[in-house]
Length: 356
Image (cartoon, rainbow, N blue to C red; front, side, top):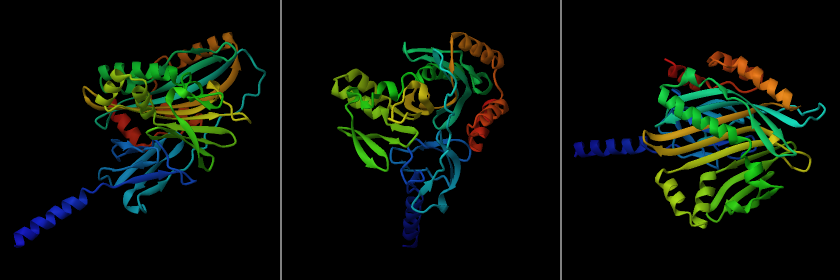
């Protein structure tokens, strides 16, 4: 009988210890924050929060690190939380308005960070600067060289090359293929994604398709904050249009694609590709080496009117300055000087291990 009781007690203990511990991350208004990356103290990835700001299980971690492109990083002791809820502080990152005399092109210089995880372990990191120029009248987009640090931090050349090419292609289209172009047209939602808008209170609008909520749009006096579960949007679109091949491929890979974008807007709420402030992109899929997760953070660090000659000189200047791989300390100094938040300590340690 005692042996039976001991066995039962052990089973109960295992059941209790294995119980999922939920984490909910909110902003100062109590709204859930989508796409918060949740990490262990060793820099391994636990998961990301959903549209309601919730991660269903922190997988037994006693302390977790929270990071997000628009909020200050935070170390959280799970035992100290009430009902698993924690508030993140706004980053208050903004860009000065362009006040000089207009020229044909609008220059947008961006700083980006890319993290690639395989089976929740960081396998690749790069960061760098990219010049972009836009002719709003002709709707032309020009990109400069990708000045980055990938050679310094990749764990092996195969992963370096694969992720760097993918990152470059994604980053090159980030600003051009943004919500302002593909999702919202003249303040109205594109019908291509079969979505509708509804008032969600506190300056927020809920974005839904026939299968449920797929995102939120939040607007204040100066900026529009859009967060979407694009995988749900894309896969429903595949179903609605009878695109069985694309749908089957995405389902087989357990495809997940979500993003957050922040744009400045004018007094009437209008914005376009030149008004980018920051961007967060998250991909997941089943690959040949396990579950792959890719995170891209992008910050606009300079807006200015320029002409073609100015842009040519700017590209030459950046290429000369960053022609060789940048060191981690130099990248962090650059970020700090431009008001970009420093890497969370846990991520910095994980990145340093990649170069060893």
